[in-house]
Image (cartoon, rainbow, N blue to C red; front, side, top):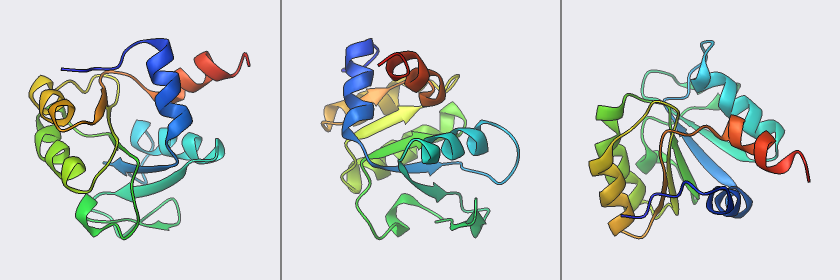
Length: 138
């Protein structure tokens, strides 16, 4: 299983993705709102995914990854660890390149399935922490 946890690997992922589906994105205060907003300020195209909301951050919010009409590079999971298995399968099905699980989100089975399908997997990390740490000194 290939979980990316090196600075070099995470930097390469963040340099190679443009469109990020934020699964569990929410209009409420917390990581599921603050991190996608931050990523937008860094130039990423964020697509909110949450079946409980029609709109998040002024954008259409999709019920599932399968509903997104455009190509998604990375799936960023703001959901409980046990919910990631289904999202991993959906990420594979839509042709995403990366499955990213936020801080505290750990699902070895989902990571193995995504990795076996050729996706790069980041687990228990936050791009809001990694971007300043890896790029703001550039």
